[in-house]
Image (cartoon, rainbow, N blue to C red):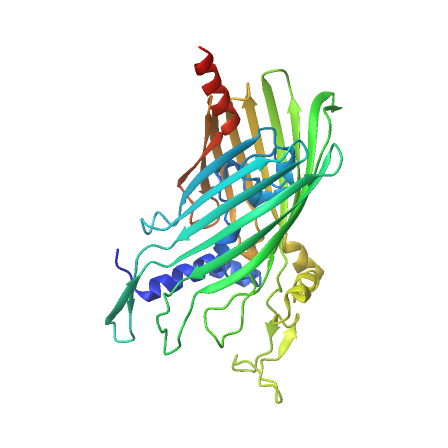
Length: 408
């Protein structure tokens, strides 16, 4: 498929701004100030189970996709080993060849610990590069990927912690010179840190229930750049915390209520001073734009993490707007058939993503399959009206099936 470099830049900007709405009605009432990062594909929900729950997953019951949501959950997974394969079409209404693929696996190391790994691959399709005169100068398939490994350990019967390390590579131009400047693939290293707590079966509101609590900080890592002399950009360092309350109605029926809260731990763009003509005012000494409110976003990584809690130009009220909320419901019948629904909310000044999700899950003897579907409420979403799916294989069940067939 042939497209120009302009299309690629627009697509990348669309991803980086995380679907920020740009309509005049909103602008007239609210000051838009979205937070942007490099490699935003790291923030996309990779699996269909969480995708059907409004992107809630930090405290959900452990599965093979816990590497993304909270590595600490793996220590409590019941099966000995397993693998999950997920596929998500992206911008399918506009182009047919952009997609996110995700493979994750785990292995228990006794009763109290587990290891896991995952590979995330984001393909932006085939791109035709042109120069300023519109002449073709080359074709390329830009892509990004991240490879993770992690370890999870129980600390007592109900509490666990985990850590994962990640290598990220983003190759958007293939080294082609853009507007006279040489480009290169971006590389970054990052880590996740998570904790998880689960209660024993107890009575809540007169019903047997299990409460899970989780917190995860992901993508704590180096900045990334696509040129040798450009300022490096933050990757999406993210704080996620939440709960999952599962009511065990009887031996065959259960329903879980999940909520996640997210906040990017990267600097908020400041408001720069302008003159009467709307042009930026530059500092006489440094030549840099003068900041009218907020703080300088060009800071070291650790400084940026802590600064992200108190650097919003509009003060504390704007800081509160930077928290996104996910909520989901998951019903299981006989631990074999699941129905899921969810809702995601982001403040209008921070991107205005609002959508509802739905999905199904089916557990068979050796594998399970999950589907999810997203309906955008505020603007066209890259995943709107798209079916995503995940396949999970439990090797324990596969071994049992082989043993039963051998004994027969």
